[in-house]
Image (tube, rainbow over all chains, first blue to last red; front, side, top):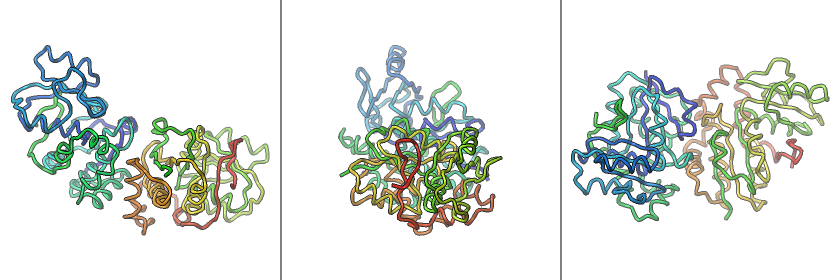
Length: 235
Length: 235
């Protein structure tokens, strides 16, 4: 059997071996959910940036630019980090440059993996099926919040560990704990996550519709991966 | 209401503010369980050391020396990290110098706290009652395993968060997750933790009795804290 493990924070990723593994980067509120929404709605490719300035400069090269810090659209950016906003407008065929507080950093720190996938509830089952078609072990890399464990990324990890249970074993304590947590709380994700620190931060920004989207299972039969040039594209 | 938060690894402790807080250091298998057992059985004080060599040298000063690495008694040490061993022999009034793989490092990294307590299941309720008598917020610092999240320290944190629920609120995602996990799995700790990576490592060492001890609730009405000189003593 292949293996699955979970890393709760980019600050712990150095403890894990990434080579030869599929790494699934997870930033449920909202970077990876937004990336999946954008590509599902026609965006051709997404180039992630760790910093605002280099991301902003991509506008001159014809990129749509999306930038978020601390849950808000960064000054001078066309788009923030709202998945719903990407669904409302038509960006078919556009290239998107994007930077977010936690998610893009987690992608950057996953570079040694053999494959990097973008995980979100709206494409969970499609991602699971893709992983099951591959021969490699899996590491779920939670972006967390400024280095801290967060509830939404971690319970997604639990959902994925559970969905992989027929094909992937785990000896990893984080994976075991989060699978248990998902079994307990997964039937009411939005109720459970309304306690989460980050959901509270987002509620203050008035984006309940985004949260609903981010917690919707399997809206898309879509797998998003990072290609060798560093672009996020549809598999 | 006072607050409670959880840190899953010494590698994440720099993300937390320690000043003005009570930090409870937790290394269930087995450092903090052993420290509690030793003091419950008459050891006067314990001086923790991060490294084997400086710990070993304390023997010349009349200290009993306890040293463990990777679950085994370190070469040249009188005692390892077995709580049962400390219960079997009479060490009344002795001073103990002790070093372990993870636990003593977590104590070292908690030094900025206003108080450091030693947490274990055998003195959980006593520690909770002491915390409730104090005015400070609480941080539960899990020693983990070589930087990784581990199941036994984390579920202990969940048990403590739950026990503190009448007096301490939490906005911390790790605390919320672990309280849920304890509510799900706390009725059968040894069954649940038999999946844990560290329990498996310990089973290989043939120390099932130690595990049973480490998972026994409230054997002692005993609170252990680190005094200003760095010694672990009975409160």
